[in-house]
Length: 158
Image (spheres, one colour):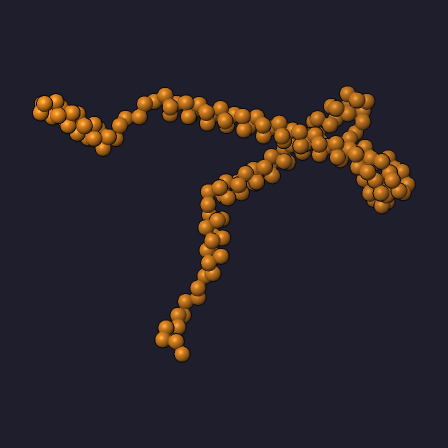
């Protein structure tokens, strides 16, 4: 038998402690917040594309409703995608794909401008930091005084 006492406490596995440290890092929490905000933003973009842009684009190109733009591959051809799905027809949903492409472009455009604005703020704050001269620390001032005193002392000893 071992001379070590049996511990009544259960030991937490090292991998679990590592995982906890990983999850609690700031970058992971920032990423989680970004995903949540992105999901909310997706709802806004979906509505923008579906309810505002697609009707305008459809009107400009001849009254085409993108959501009902599809090609029937197998089965009876009907007027709307909902009807085709209801009867089990095999379809290529071109309009749904176009909506997704438009949404992607809008999100990409919004993210581009958001990052561009953030970079401007970041660069301008860095310029302000570079423009304002830093005051020397107490240690630097003291070392400068010691240096000056040693230079003056060496001149006096000559």
